[in-house]
Image (tube, rainbow, N blue to C red):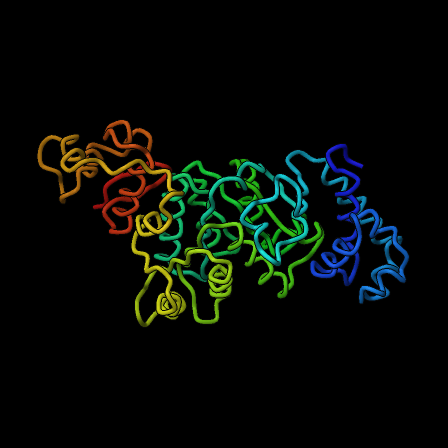
Length: 370
């Protein structure tokens, strides 16, 4: 057994790997016995008295279960591989509040990322180019403002959101609908590696070898929203799983944000429906920051005329930042130094300009369009 895994954690992991013993049944066992080790050693008749299938208790010593347990413990020996049980100190506080919080979480990466305030970004797997650009831009700015960006590692909006956070040098958290040793989709293997290397984390409640299955993704979605202070839906059809995430967020008491789109675009209709149901109509990152006052790490806005005083002479197209970028491309930090603005505030302004089509970021450098 790994020195980092306690006997109690190993017992919970053993229970977690039993067939037909889902989170609710596991919780029933843990409530009936003093601890997981006692439950694991209890007679089968005690399990059956709790209404659990006979197969659960009968397979405790089965070779396949023992092999999976040994493989899981071996995985936990690896660098940055963690097991969090629900009542452990490192278990995410917001997620712990949920009645259906996962009994345990597998985490690969930095546990510190889970302690940051998180904002989820979700949307269509077949997002439009503007939708992908919005996801990446919003994620980049939110990461710059001190949020960890959380999403589901799916194609489309999820991937763009993770990449946007990485662009800003911020942590991003990917919650999987598979085990951490069965990454899905396969195309996002390099992205998953970048997330871990960038100080973020991969998270799953499923056993490490669990393949993709349709029933796993709604379960995954409740974790995405449960970890986060709010959920931003970028693009979604009326049948999108992103609406499930948004409605779970509402049930969990989280804020829901939705970006409106063209009225005839199918991928805008889900967002419009959420707005009708009370989601915050979101046109800029500032809309999110205003709704999450107390969590944002932005300084107070400058006094009237303070920003303009930083840029003597007429500002092109009415915005002072364009004056600096006309001289040549700059990265975010260089632009912050040149403008005298704090980086989070600067990123908000740049995202606004990017959404307006007035600046673009390529290879980490901001430049004027046209």
